[in-house]
Image 1: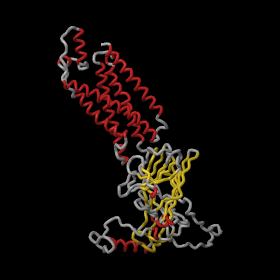
Image 2: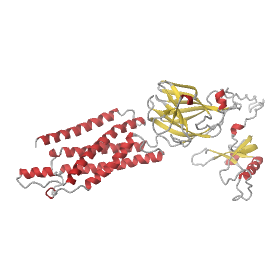
Image 3: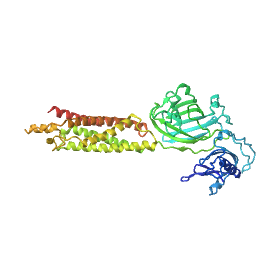
Image 4: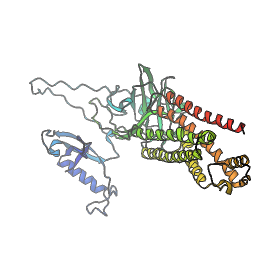
Length: 511
């Protein structure tokens, strides 16, 4: 016969048999399936209600007739049996059905005492809860009330017109903003036809308002006529932020909330009360159920990609880029500036060439790690300034290294030692009273000028990203503060390049 499947009870299993149908239920499901099936591949199907070949769904109405045997090893025997009374098209939905009143009895329990009557569930309170995140801790409590049902909450005229409402409480163990939104694709940004609109809780104002998530950037506050959230509040005390609001189920221009189906939600929290890059974020699919005095069923949320999954990627990216542009690139430039005090014939050139090569290798590797993280997270690339500068560095450094390898030739007299400029060769010739070196070609002169300018620009961009990267790192919650790193970053670079520049200036003025 037919069964209702649920999330698995044990790791490694695909599903659990929640209920099995009685004989009448099996017959009714078969009849509806035959009426909806395509007669082509299905010889028994009539196609009078549809032409489905797969994905058949239905709404089942019935009551639990026999409880399952939890002691049995047979999944079917463990499942309770549903006495099915109706099988309807899935479009009808459970929201259209109201449970009949349950007649209480005074039947004694096993101890001989009369069973206590079941107390009504208060649909004005939060009846369901889940933990959205364990680090940082973010809890969600909610209740869905549908108009025209036996909910014991008095709905306002606005709620009735919208078919009902969903009340939400978010509890964040941190001082910062909190955001929550319905999502059509599990991501921050939807499509023009299905825009994502978030309820953002801003403790400083304090206010809970609707914001349009139109791009991977700071959201845009919706106009006053769209601010339809009810019973809003946001408090912050003792390092805990609590946000409450009620959202109408159906609103023009917004994704509707299915009160008795699976809905995809996204969330995010900030490091501070100022609306900026999120500290953490996530996605969860929740099977909602309307509240009735008899309560709601237990449910199994399905969580999307954990926000912390890519922390190791960003750590590896940051370490490689810090070494590349905090050590190898500035040392390569410093060796060229301070060549006059570096001992050994052509030593500075070997240092310069090796550092540039290693910088390029690390840049390629770090760029690949960042792209991999964005690809796996399903997040668009190169939206922020840091990311765009990083892309520019990646492209330009490849041309810079290739240009160095394919540089125009020096004049014949200087080829014996490529580590020397033509000017250096000329100075040696003057000192030894030998014929001067022939002049460089225009191509060589232009290349040297361009190589130096591009190198300086690359170093500047690398220094900027070395500054902005730790700020993003801190915003992701991977470190508490970037202040210590930034002090070390600027102190090291300032000292190294400053000393090299002084040496270069002194060597030039002495000539």
